[in-house]
Amino acid sequence: MVRWQPEARGRLEEAALALYGERGFENTTVAEIAERAGLTERTFFRHFADKREVLFSGSGALQELLVRTAADAPDSLAPIDAAAAGLEAAGAQLEELRGREFARQRQAIIAASAELQERELIKLAAWSSALADTLRDRGVGEPAASLTAEIAIAVFRIAFERWLEETNERDFRQLIRESLDELRSVTAAG
Amino acid sequence: MVRWQPEARGRLEEAALALYGERGFENTTVAEIAERAGLTERTFFRHFADKREVLFSGSGALQELLVRTAADAPDSLAPIDAAAAGLEAAGAQLEELRGREFARQRQAIIAASAELQERELIKLAAWSSALADTLRDRGVGEPAASLTAEIAIAVFRIAFERWLEETNERDFRQLIRESLDELRSVTAAG
Image (cartoon, rainbow over all chains, first blue to last red; front, top):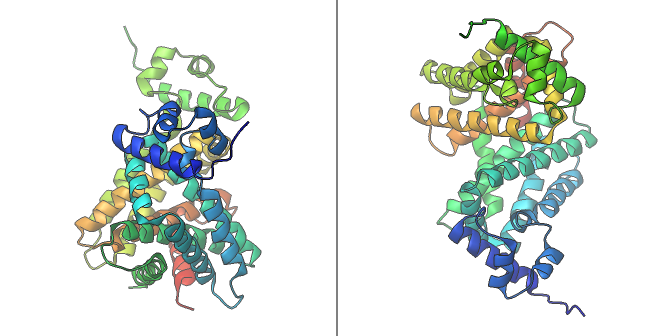
């Protein structure tokens, strides 16, 4: 009989992150993660499809939140501001559920692996594509919808990098707003 | 003795594109490409490291042109306009050396393969990163340099997609300028 272990997922994540950091992602096996967490491989596979998913399991929910918030933004908002509302919601969620320390560890692991960097690029391309769909549903034409989605994701990436680096107390929402202001300043006609 | 075959590279590219289009990238072998071109596998490998490189061999030269043109742009240009000068040069080069029909075929092949889509994302991420380096060399601070580079690549992607689709006669440079205007319009404060 399988006992439900509510804390198993968190223990597996913690063990995986520690091992990826120590040995590198490629050199870590699922068996080692399970052992470090004091659980079985079978339990691991009940929570994650593979060892990569430990690092990307939150991505689908964040994409959904991003898109839903942009879709529900007031009609009066310009497309970039509707997108920004979605970015802020996703950033705040990331901050609340995961926190900076998890994100920093995760980012260092990704930076050390070409395979994970590819996966991260694909994740962001999927966000961009889903956001462009949402903007088209809001009545935004092309190429404005695709362009707005692409630059919104660029804003998110910049805000995310700053959030990881910041030693001060600014939160993710604020960094999204600052990066958007920065975007307006770098794109202003000279 | 190896006879120099100046037309061999072009024949291999043409054969590869035709086969990738007919059977899909994954289902085509180097042996088949060489056979279709009436050449040997050995000749193939004198021109390309692997079958993927047939689709990406021009990427390094385009990146170099993009970066060099942005670096050499007049100091008086705003960062986004220096980046746009690089994009225009790369776009014009692509148009002149490859042409729309090659680009369309290539794009259809990439769209049908997850592996090639990843490679394409990585290529564009490398362009963005090289462009951000160049902007920093021009004295642009962070996050402005990274943000400008990211959105410049977004502008390039949009212009590229429109260039592939256009039935009219607008050239790549013009589409870059139009996409940049569009960017300014979508990022303008509401």
